Image 1 (cartoon, protein in one colour):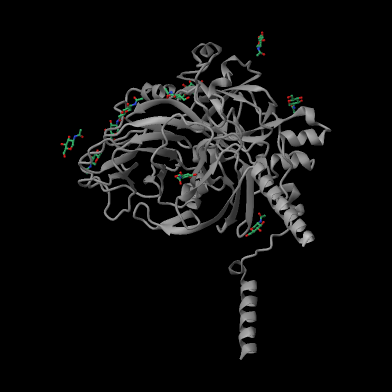
Image 2: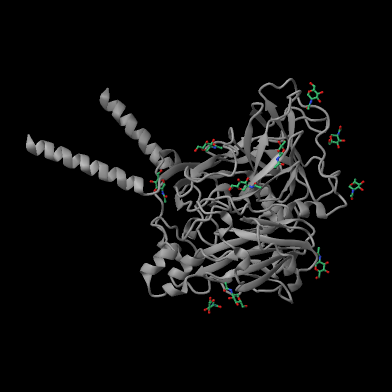
Length: 593
Ligand SMILES: *[C@@H]1O[C@H](CO)[C@@H](O)[C@H](O)[C@H]1NC(C)=O
Ligand SMILES: *[C@@H]1O[C@H](CO)[C@@H](O)[C@H](O)[C@H]1NC(C)=O
Ligand SMILES: *[C@@H]1O[C@H](CO)[C@@H](O)[C@H](O)[C@H]1NC(C)=O
Ligand SMILES: *[C@@H]1O[C@H](CO)[C@@H](O)[C@H](O)[C@H]1NC(C)=O
Ligand SMILES: *[C@@H]1O[C@H](CO)[C@@H](O)[C@H](O)[C@H]1NC(C)=O
Ligand SMILES: *[C@@H]1O[C@H](CO)[C@@H](O)[C@H](O)[C@H]1NC(C)=O
Ligand SMILES: *[C@@H]1O[C@H](CO)[C@@H](O)[C@H](O)[C@H]1NC(C)=O
Ligand SMILES: *[C@@H]1O[C@H](CO)[C@@H](O)[C@H](O)[C@H]1NC(C)=O
Ligand SMILES: *[C@@H]1O[C@H](CO)[C@@H](O)[C@H](O)[C@H]1NC(C)=O
Ligand SMILES: *[C@@H]1O[C@H](CO)[C@@H](O)[C@H](O)[C@H]1NC(C)=O
């Protein structure tokens, strides 16, 4: 008797110990992503689209600060795949970043499990396939990081969270678009704009019949949080909702000073959270519009996405002309002034209880300056290529840190130029030698005639200035040294510059790229390699700043022979296994008879 109760007590103790251990650690959240082709007709023409678990766009990843996120990605496409989590900066583990400089691609029919912690982050981001131009066919979805319940948010809890993915769209598949680019041609005007994977509402006769459009259902007198992402290829979009204000609240992981806008220019790769108050009298439904910007809006009329905001007490359909875009075709400073008006709420708490503004970026000394100039595409070795500082990036055949760990020589060079190179452009795997705990000043100088959005993985950065013309040292006098927004992307207007400050506090190699898919595909990117020099010869110390490669790391390039073939587990994937299974079932049936 005594011994039984003792063991019961021991078991109970053990259980409570296990429970408290698991409570002490950060929670794990699991996702399974089957990435496959489906046929859809977003613009009325059937075409091949990339879906996540059969859905286009994919369902959002929706987690809380400090969660450990595990995503098992199954590649059911006919080509290599990598998923990236743009703006979600994996601390110490670029091994999970999902770009070719950090990861070997997942071959067709294989799966690969990502695991990373969303440490000290909040905000609205999105995931997408990073290779082979696949984002042009979809494969994207939202990525939400909610604050922990103990951290206050700087607005009343909204009625609901609504993810809106907007983007230009072609009826050609990503592989056909890739062929166009490989052939040295430009993509031309997109065929339309999608809102959550759907085409335009028939707002007038210019829109063909029978197109399925997005409807967002709301109740009157409430406030909703809209998380809007431009997931397109290269078109800047003006986002607006008829008769409604958009109260800007968060940009890529930072709370903003809350201000009303009647419309917002959202450039490729950018994410914004707005609070939408349903304060209209619902005499009809309202148009949700995402229309092309920084182009001749008359000739680009078809590049307009239109959805519907429907109140539960709506008295009828939306009708009449679309709400007007900003009337500034000849005032190129409108959009830039709007961008400059976005400011950091320095007193609000972000992911941690202390105010966002306690990191006083304006008083930190810059340790290195890079002036990065992009140019219109040029021919290099007979191929059309895009460049930054005269370098068109070539992906390393072995991911950069994997090459370091295995002493693969000649995989890349640490010589990315600090200023635009004079002389003829070249194709190279040239990356930035970053200094751990350094504070970089990067000037993005856009020498092209279209807007670019630059993005850096692994960090958010401060957008401190932008203006037309050439940047000079005197331009620093105009910097916002107090409440410039910390975000993960920054637009650069044509013939203009944007200045950003980056604190290199995250060890690894991190992709710096234009989010404009065509220029990215043609080489407008590089990486920043940030190594903690104190850890040389101190493996335990090294673990504190950079995690080792995960157990399931994939090998390719010079290390290809280290890769074990993947056993394809699902019978449906393997005809021989499938036949074997049938034979076995048949044998069992015969045996039973
Ligand atoms: C592939 O998926 C299976 C489960 O379906 C999982 O057990 C395995 O770890 C995954 N492989 C990799 C390399 O992540
Ligand atoms: C995300 O999850 C939270 C609860 O944790 C929920 O309130 C919210 O509606 C979810 N958002 C989306 C877009 O699913
Ligand atoms: C924003 O506009 C709404 C009306 O749509 C108004 O109620 C609110 O006070 C405005 N907020 C600010 C900060 O201007
Ligand atoms: C309310 O609805 C009526 C039509 O039902 C419309 O004429 C009026 O302009 C609307 N008022 C507001 C403030 O939107
Ligand atoms: C836009 O294109 C239309 C039609 O080609 C032309 O008439 C108009 O002048 C153009 N507008 C601008 C601002 O270039
Ligand atoms: C359709 O609407 C657009 C924008 O409101 C307008 O410019 C265009 O003239 C209209 N086209 C037709 C055929 O009515
Ligand atoms: C900034 O955040 C604080 C919460 O700390 C909030 O009370 C305040 O309204 C916000 N300010 C603006 C201008 O949005
Ligand atoms: C920044 O540099 C100045 C000299 O240029 C120096 O006086 C100051 O202490 C430095 N500040 C920090 C925070 O290192
Ligand atoms: C990279 O920078 C470090 C200082 O941060 C320096 O010691 C090293 O020599 C540099 N490497 C190259 C190849 O320039
Ligand atoms: C590109 O650079 C050249 C040379 O500095 C300059 O003359 C030209 O105006 C620039 N173009 C743009 C669009 O910035």
